[in-house]
Image 1 (cartoon, rainbow, N blue to C red):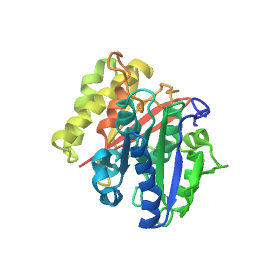
Image 2: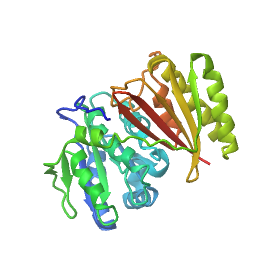
Image 3: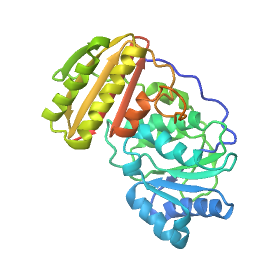
Length: 317
């Protein structure tokens, strides 16, 4: 069972969010370089967060102008799509003077993204429209239409109000734009893993839940900072379950394709589609649990339903 989302989507103006479709390097540069240079000429702060190879393309083509642009490798900064809005896009936009338009190129979807990562990627693209609604910003999102599967391009039409076709610099309205439907459609149940270690917890057993996760994570190959991150994520998620999710939950830990996966299920209803994706003011008490997990995990998937919430996070071994 999934929950339908209708808010907080609405009119975007003055926010602009086009998808840039490209077929080759020339298409890519023809679509991105003018965008960057027009921003610099207008005195607008510009950031480029794209996968490494494309980042080198843009940097080299910009020459001396590259020094005026915030350059980020999306394979690192956006490995977990859930951290891109708070840790990349909003982090850059919020640091600029109020009211000044910012320009960002963000490429969160590239050939080679795993099947586990993709639902989080497309939800991220849909949720940008909610996170930046009414903000003075332009976020251009490139899509490699030669290498990406057809359904990814189809989803791009649904998550972007306008699109730019290869060889064109003109934005065209996307009649398929429906970000709220994308968020709902990819709110996929996360099937249980039978061989996972399972531990039911409540307020009295919170410390033990963390020790259980750390012990199993270490047994499965996590060490050092990654093991510390698993401990922190477990503590945050289980505490959220006790405080906001009905007072109890179930922790599961297992190994999967080079990762240790930690999952917490509880009976809480998480209505806020931007939970864990918006920065939290420094003076605010609480509200950082899922945000913190997004910032430290290699991937976070979340499923909301009327019967509860599941948060699953991956840590590379």
